[in-house]
Amino acid sequence: MGFISRIQLKNFRNYPELELNLEPGISVFRGRNGQGKTAFLESLGFLSLLRSIRSSNTRHLKNWQGDFFSLRACLDRVTRPELDLSVYYGEKRQLSLDGNRVATTSDFIGVVKSVAFMPEDIEIVKGSASWRRQYIDILLSQLSPHYLQSLKHYQKALKSRNQVLKRGVNVEVELDVWDDILMEHGCEVLEARLELMPRLSDAVNSLVKKMLKEDFVLDLRYNNSVAKGASDLRASYREKLRESRERDKLYRVTHQGPHRDDLALSLNGRSLSHYGSEGQCRLSSLILKAAAVELLLPVEKPECLILLIDDVLGELDEFSRRAFLKCVSRGDQVFIACTDIPAGLEDYEYTTYEVDAGRVERQ
Ligand SMILES: Nc1ncnc2c1ncn2[C@@H]1O[C@H](COP(=O)(O)OP(=O)(O)OP(=O)(O)O)[C@@H](O)[C@H]1O
Image (cartoon, rainbow, N blue to C red; front, top):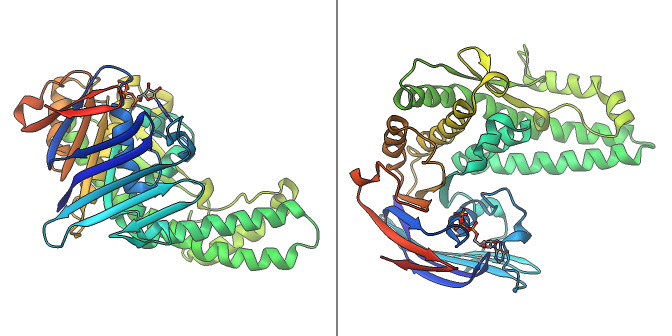
């Protein structure tokens, strides 16, 4: 339990400079279109994950006039002293906690945990497999710093193996070395993803019951060629890499592994992306994100879970909106961006901030 009590932005999107005290619980950021509501949520998301919640490139976050951006926040914690988080992105990146330099991103990510609900979340259902892998990776990275490390090692090994494949001559011995490394980290990634599936599925379907009046079953199936029917994951992984080596050499890219996996989603037995209505796809993506909240809430840590909700309440009917608000109101801090106060919020206490052309004022 904890909350971000103060935030300071410099050159972030349309905020040349902002200093703001924040409250625990629900905060509503209200303003006309294009004033900086999403940008503010994005700054909080960046403090948590060191990436944009809008899936933009980090260089888009820097104000058009500036040559760096920086974020600073103070985290109030119940059982431990306050913690000062600082992020600087200029020519070089600098991260620090309480003034001490943090060398690796995995030591920074997860201090503040977050789940963002954005209009583009529909891509988790309708978009390419990379959206679904990203959804799983962000959740698992916050559940376990070890996962983030395994994933980074895997991605590095994959890049190196692909570079060897691109070179194309006298590569057999080098490929043998990279196959071992890839298999080691790939199995860690794969095991964590496979272990997550039953828990995620349970959380999703208990939310389906709470948020939808109809009797729906939202089925999640992790599609992976390495683990399929394998009793020994490592042996199967090695075998698949060996099997596809000639093809990898021909196309100069690694075909097997968790970087090619997908999460198949179906509603009442039919593929969501092929048969689901727009509303069913939107609601399913929202439920997947809400399930991430359910899994992150019980993590025993004195830090905090922030929820960033941008423009997704308007499309829910009253029944689903109330159930959704009930679920997300359990976050330590909930930030809602909107043009008008959403219906259903009158049941909760909340603080309102007015956003106007890169300025934020508490009402
Ligand atoms: N790197 C940047 N530097 C300066 N301004 C930017 C940058 N990126 C985006 N902007 C501008 O910041 C403004 C705020 O954008 P933002 O998406 O936060 O608005 P919003 O209040 O969420 O609007 P909406 O209600 O339409 O979603 C926009 O006018 C946008 O063009």
